[in-house]
Length: 324
Ligand code: HEC
Ligand code: HEC
Image (cartoon, rainbow, N blue to C red):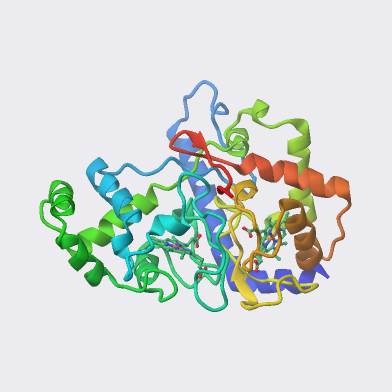
């Protein structure tokens, strides 16, 4: 039974997965070669042969551009009617998503978190975008959201002397299209959440996980969850059919990008239509629909225990669930 989906997986994305493995192998060879005389090469070494890798620290960025990007992300002048900012749906004080559904056109889709989006190989539930640079203009133009475009937003910002001087300080000139998009992107790329307990365990801190949590991780791998949810974002790098063995979500799309499980304990509701209210329900439905497995209560609890170790930190504080 397993063969039917793994074949599709390999033909669609096997090449990518292989490339990633090859790159990781090369990197570890290079690391070993560049430090031949280290006393204990094992200390601080990321756990090897695991299907998941830790979230890195945010890239270095110009603080003025970053601050400007953050201000723009919260600015309602980025929407045509002046009612919505990016932050209206993507609350970075909580989980980078909020609890809203029904905002991205037809069919209405659960809001994806902006956290760690920079690390996924495609963006959006359907994976239509090849990265943040390709996505940012679409997010401005989406008629269900901002319903504008970069030029129109810049024209509105140019009328504001305070905004103009902040652009001058960061870019040496008043607001223009390229700098506007660059500032937004700079901010989006900073939205990484390192330091999850699971990542600390991957980094060699054996005390970061309890034995029950580790057992949950083993269950995650042995059931085959990690065939689809793997890589740095524990998802975000493969396309898959949803509902392989049994129906999962009845509304389209049928083929989706496997979502990231980073911070998943904070991002209820689950699935692209938001139809699973709890992590327990999501895990049970996943096992049945994608793996043809009926889980017992113990297995569900064990998996959920592991998923709760995937919550990272943004600016040093743990990511939290959306405000009710
Ligand atoms: C009205 C709510 C809403 C607003 C406003 C909004 N978004 Fe989104 N965003 C969503 C939804 C819903 C999705 C998932 C849509 C999809 O998959 O097609 C999403 C997806 C994303 C993603 C992809 C995440 C991933 O992991 O694939 C990014 C990045 C993003 N938005 C950034 C932004 C930016 C930048 C702005 C402001 C210019 C913005 N959004 C405004 C609702 C919103
Ligand atoms: C064959 C690939 C595949 C396998 C195997 C798989 N998943 Fe998924 N997972 C998906 C896809 C695709 C989705 C998105 C479904 C949708 O909403 O359309 C998803 C969604 C999820 C979600 C909800 C994420 C969110 O933000 O909405 C959770 C939680 C999850 N999976 C956990 C698991 C667990 C635990 C297992 C093992 C029991 C598992 N998955 C096995 C492909 C898979």
